[in-house]
Amino acid sequence: MADQIPPESDFTEEYDIITDEDIAEIRDALEGGRMDEAASKILESLEALENARLDIAVTGESGSGKSSFVNAIRGLQDDDEGAAATGVVETTMEPTPYPHPTHPNVTLWDLPGIGTPEFQSHTYLERVGFPRYDFFILIASERFRANHAQLAREIQAMGKRFYFVRSKVDADLDAARRRRPASYSEQGVLTQIRDDCCRRLLAEGVASPTVFLLSSWELGSYDFLALEETLAKELPGHKRHTFLLALPNISLGVLQRKKEAMQRQIWKLATISCSVAAVPIPGLSVACDVTILIKTLSKYRQTFGLDDESLCKLAEKVGKPVEDIKEAIKSPLAREISRDLVLKLLTKAGGGALMFIEYLASTVPVFGSMVAGGISFATTYYMLRSFLDEVARDAHSVLIKAFETDV
Image 1 (tube, helix red, strand yellow):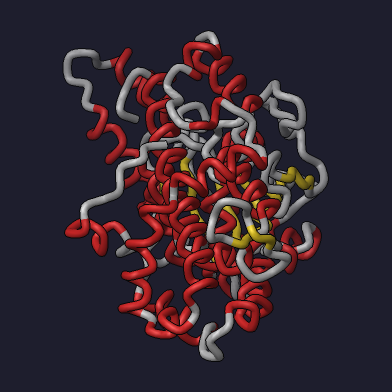
Image 2 (cartoon, rainbow, N blue to C red):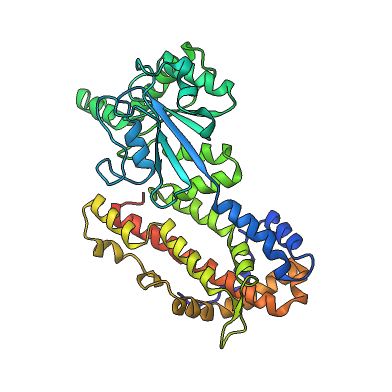
């Protein structure tokens, strides 16, 4: 980690991630002037975020790519252990839950295909357990039909959201390229597919349909980021956070949004660390709970896919030695995240923390009357923020190294 302290002129800009809403929360939490009095409220907020469940229903006609989509969102290949079964005929006979491998509070449900003799649309939602799902993904690999439209209307009538996904667009593009190589236009073909889907849904009575074009084999391409942004706007805040952190690291945009989501929780983690079971650190004017910090740093590493298991899967996916991928990692992640590493990072954070506490004291005046607790808070906050910055940079570098492009 670099020892350089940011210039004072850049300091407030660097911490613009502390929003007015965050400042109001901090001021309210510290109204009594004691960090330990704020701890229970903040801990409750963090636990609600940590325990937020998200259940996503994925349905469509047989052979539309439902199971491959379930696997892709969970960062799995179709032949990985724990992957949803796939096939050209309907392989899902009952609603089947597939927990996310690293975010177990997120579950994707592979539902039986609609329109089969066993599941007609008018009884479908009751039979698959409608109330358990937060939203529905309705997938078609060729055309959206009456079954999709009828199901969408019933979902809407029962008060939940649905999203139309046209899958396997990579296969359509490949076929169009082969048929008309001279006049081929990727954007032209995609526009034609989207317009055809919307026209058919309008004809079936779906008002103002939006269709997202995807490929489970190239998840970061086409409309996936638009789908992700739409869900981020429409999900409740705590479920939005859960959904974002569970996304596979398929683009620089996803990495940036993950970083921003985790930045917004740093002040809460720093407060808890310096209040609950805080222990003085020899040689530093800091008291904190090192166990909380170890857990947080480990979570950062896993969320950005920089743990050994994630790196090995990525290397296998792109056909490169994992040692080559790891060469892109420049931060202390190469070493075990241990108590010793946390103490070294806290020591390095000291200089920047002094500038940070001055900034906080000017923004939240209560810090001026709690110097000892404030120093611990500022040091812990600055360390977590600096480590998160480095992890995000490493994840960026790893993605580019793996795919040899600015994804």
